[in-house]
Image (cartoon, rainbow, N blue to C red; front, side, top):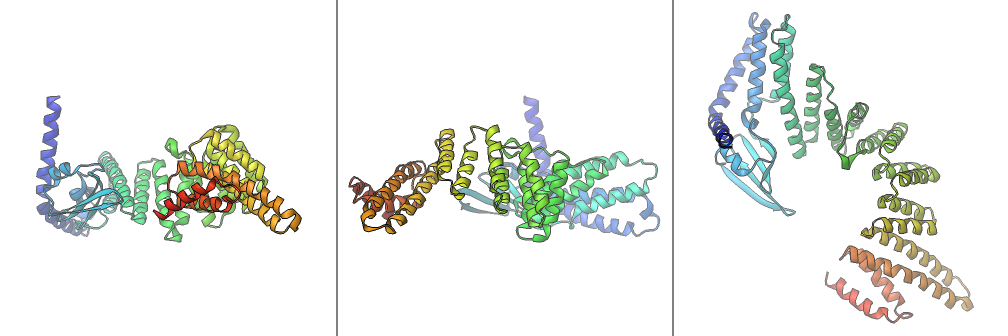
Amino acid sequence: MRQVSLLFIAVFALGFNCYAQNESKFKSLKGDIAKSDAATQDAKKSINPKTWMDRGKLFQDAYGINVSFLRVGLTPDEAKMFFKDPLQILSSVEGGTKKETYEYSQIKLNFENGTLASWVETEAVTDDPLGKAISAYQKATSLDEKGKNTKKINEAYAVIINDLSAKAFNEYELKKYKDAYNSAEQRIAVNKLLGKQDTSFYYYAGAFALTQSEIDSSMWQQAADNLEKAAQLGFKENADRKGEIYHQLFTAYLKLGQPENALKAVKTGFEKNPSNLSLVIDLINYYMNRNQNQEALTYIDQAIAKEPKNAQLYFAKGKMLDELGEKEKAIEAYDQAIAADPTRYDSYYNKGVVFYNSALKLYDDANNASNAEFDAKMKIADEEFMKVIPLMEKALELNPGDHNIMDILKTLYYRLKTRYPELEAKYNDIVKKLEAK
């Protein structure tokens, strides 16, 4: 244990010393790259694989000069051991998250609640150093007829692949989605040079493009192409996101005006992941938008058959049946959702809405009735409204302070307190709660 601790200290000390030399190394790298630029134009040096091997290493060093010691989760104290004291620290609190930015001469480190979340280089040796390193190694390969440098080049590619991963995720964290996509594409290309399929980064390239597509519609095709490739290669999602790739594909294909491909994607995803609510909702919406309601219900029932205790599925079924005007069946579905998960406030709420809308129709019926029938029909409408109250009260109990639920209860208490005097106190109480907000 003691030896491990000493090694740990030695590694951190090395990191500190390396960063202490960064400013001079920064200038040195710029000069070395200028010399390399000249070498690539020299008739003899430009055809020597070593010229390009050295050039590739220079660009790798240029990339790593500020970020080689960085990792998400680094603490401020660890950062100081690597980077010395910052020039200044900017602090703020946003949405309960404590944010600190450590500013150095060439980089900013962004911490959230005490751990490193992202970083921004404020001064770089050169633009796109990893891309230039890759190009240099490719040139070296083309000149190395006997393959003497193959092992070293492949080792360099392995390091670059890891660097591109960190770079892509950092860019995504900074909301530079197009840059994150480009880094993911670079990583895919490097893996191809090694004869490997980069399944995970086909997915991430697609996901980054999908996010960028919300503000740049030209990226929908890149999103679809990469997500499709990842799905074909069998990309495995985390347990809590199984099937999400097909939901993303469905979205991309619809945006591209390709409903057939969208339906194919969501059906494939549903068959593999029948409990994924996003896919069920995609299917429901797809068929409902085409007035094919029975197909939508069929998929919900198939999912329920495989996940009989899934409250979300019963909830989705209840919502659809309500929209189709199937009151009793909708109520039954919401009851099943409540039985599966009695803590979901929205199941009580939506069931209450079914009765509320039914009561409104009965109320209209009473207003259109003859004088002789009016009182009897109004009584029936009020009895239907009364069924809403315990459901909304339960919803409010599970979701305290919900303004919308409180407004509904206020309306019901006021409307019914004449016929049901016991509601007078509840009405006064809810008015006080609303006024206090």
